[in-house]
Image 1: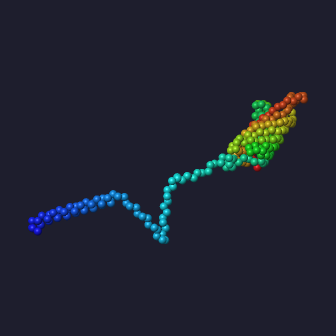
Image 2: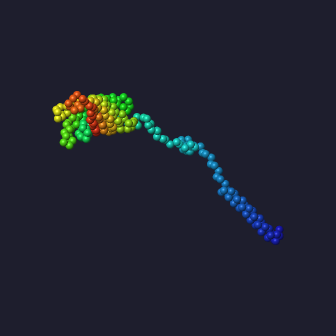
Length: 243
């Protein structure tokens, strides 16, 4: 081979080797970029090793859990029912004002006792015995004598509702009275009737406001046998204990 030919062949071989190297570098770079941008391949699950436990992963439920709710109140149940008085004995005291003569106020005091039977959920009926007096007083220059009386009769009370402490009461019966008048000892008798309202402080104790009217007959003018029907009234506030 000639020297000139060898000199020309050397640069040509260098250029060919450079082009080959450049093409190799270009293909390697493209493969590298493709590997970087491709999604990672899924790693196959490894079987558990004997003696080891596989952690359990809780899966999310597609249905939201229903929160626990409190039970609905039973409005008709025992917890919503007020404890009502029951059948039993009672004792009461009363105080207030009374009127035998119009515009002549007398202080009234009385006491009563009896027994009531439960007949319905909110109603009771019973019997009563009582005694009391209207104290002596003066109306201008006129003496209003003291009046002492006893009574026997029936009474009833009615609650205003299942959970109400308020109640109404009625009473009626026979009464007899004695008094010391200008003309000596005077006695009379007749019928009485009353109506009132009260409130239960507890199952065994209550307060009540009562109006009672008393009817009786008396001599018209003390000189003949003619009689007329007269009336007396009391308005009292009382307290009662039940057993």
